[in-house]
Image (cartoon, rainbow, N blue to C red; front, side):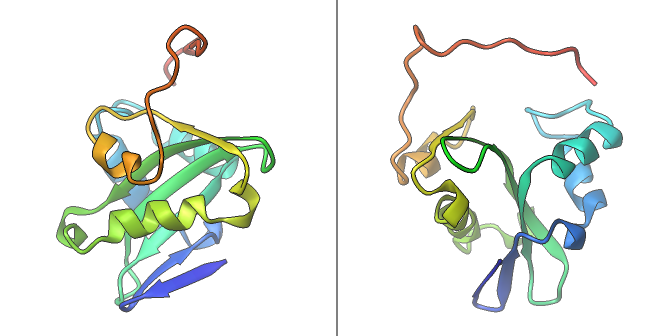
Amino acid sequence: MEWRRDGYLICTDSDRLDRAVVWEFLRTSYWASGLTREVIDRSIDSALTFGLYAPSGDQVGFARVVTDRARFAWLSDVFVLDGHRGKGLGVWLVQTVLSHPDLLGARVMLGTADAQGLYRRFGFAPADPERVMDRRGRPG
């Protein structure tokens, strides 16, 4: 699927992704630092992905959703590169992800340390800490 706005493109074709761009950003992010390229590639392979592309065709953003495409979705790895921030692209990217037909009606969860304001715009609220549990795997 594709969406266009102001010369930018969001596309769900994972073959189009510039995985080097994704890995370069994620390896220095607070949520994925230290992960290997192999781990990032595997996470992309098993997810519904959204690449954000500039008018030049270069990839400038990304989002990934782990989902059963019916009842549950985990939104992750959302970013827009510095040179393209301040144009509403992050809002557009999240809006596009949430409007994907495979996610309509699904419970969508995420984790963030710094973008609560962005996600509140879309109805996200803190989860019930007594009901949500977490088990972390071994780092890759």
